[in-house]
Length: 186
Image 1 (cartoon, rainbow, N blue to C red):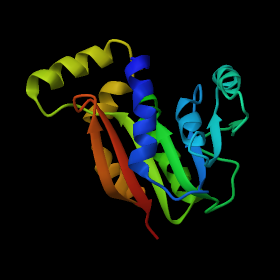
Image 2: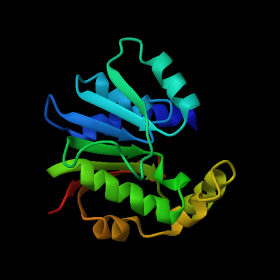
Image 3: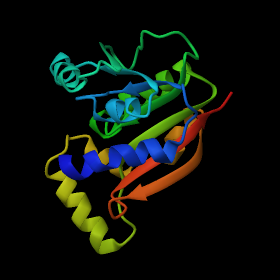
Image 4: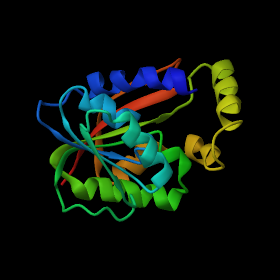
């Protein structure tokens, strides 16, 4: 899945279409692929993750040091309120229990400026019943134990409860991945 997902990184940057010079937070950055995709467009990026091993890989990929990677807990971020213009979590929510997912979204809202953009990139299910069945069982075969609950949950309702208003959504990869662009509500 790594190769098809890597092609989506630039699509995320283009879809989000944020103003030049924006300050961006990449939550659960992992090996830094989404953060580096944003950095190629000359944004100021900070990527956080709890895994030192993942961050070590991210730093090796970050050849021009265009991204600041930092070890941090996404449920208790070490940033002041309303600091970032954009907060993004890419393929991270499905790896979290529901209670952690709620805390991460709450923190993303806290550190994002009023009217700022919040981006969620994660798995979805195609609308076609056959593809839905195939995608669900394929992804379930290699993803974390939290994936089944995540994919069956109402992400839109969770975002509303987290004070995120959805502006736009793009389905890619046969509808198996969704890019959600939202804004922070007051």
